[in-house]
Amino acid sequence: MNKHLERVMQRIDALTEFSGKTVSWLVLAMVVLIVYDVTMRYWFQSGSVALQELEWHLFALLFLLGMAYTHKHDGHVRVDIVFTSRLLNDRQRAWVNLLGTLFFLVPFCLMVLFTSWPFVYNSWLFSETSPDPGGLPHRFLVKSALLLGFGLLLLQGIAEFIRNLYVVLGPRET
Image 1 (cartoon, helix red, strand yellow):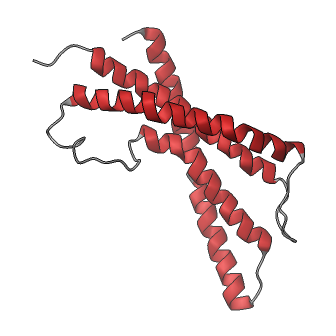
Image 2: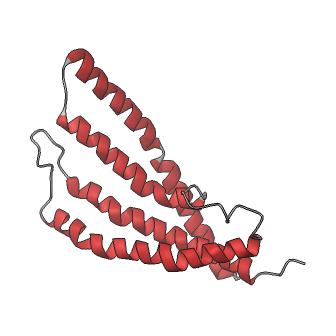
């Protein structure tokens, strides 16, 4: 294995692990927030637009910033009928992953990054806030998670590409 590519892969994996484990704490924050919000609404008839917006902001952050971690740990949904069966050996599975990364994951991430850039830029340009009375300010920060999340997913896709490339190019099974 090329030492430089191995180091790149390890650094991307470390970044993904760090971001995934850090973002996972948002689940706890979201649960506490939802319990509080529901309790206030149903027991005390006191709702808050800001709390409801914060709930979907946390959910968006959790989803977007957790994509790379989920991909690293092979937690995404895919059609596994052939992939996990005994029809494919490790090298063939690596080929499927390699081609899937090259022709689907990387182009999709790049498309999202390029098409969401103006959306995020305009949000920053106008310091976008919630249009609802009592809503949260700084909506542009949440929209920036689009770029960060898909950037992390793209990086993790590169690490997975390298990992699968070594399986494909590695010594043949006998």
